[in-house]
Length: 147
Image 1 (cartoon, rainbow, N blue to C red):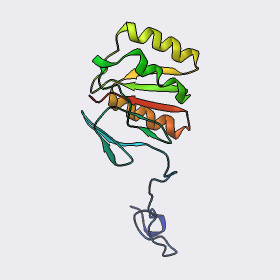
Image 2 (image 1 turned 90 degrees about the vertical axis):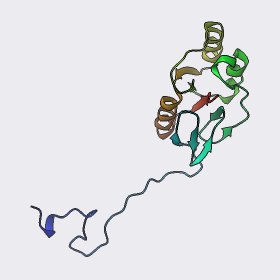
Image 3 (image 1 turned 120 degrees about the vertical axis):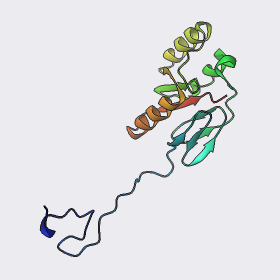
Image 4 (image 1 turned 180 degrees about the vertical axis):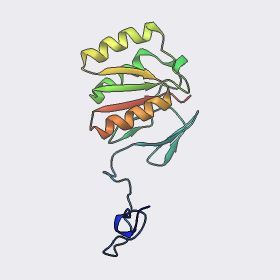
């Protein structure tokens, strides 16, 4: 059993009578990260969003006109090209579903020509992947279909 000399500083006071160490998540406040999600919503920096949205590290595009995978058109994905991202994570709802080939093929070709990759996944995976890529300071966007 560990005695006072070998106690961990985060559980008891150490030999110099310092208060216990407390760790808190820190980072730039201006960076958008996902702090929660459910079947029909996501939370960005604690703020709940329940409609389709595009989230970037420095801004949120709440006016993305794509509402659902069934309504997704090539123009919705082409509208993401000016964002100049390395990768766009397309969240397709509570489960992974791919857009029709008539939308995906030309969208991927046009995004690739602009130097942008497109990854399709469910919304939960997109949120987790986005947070990892943001922590790596990658140029990422999450385009989430919540309808």
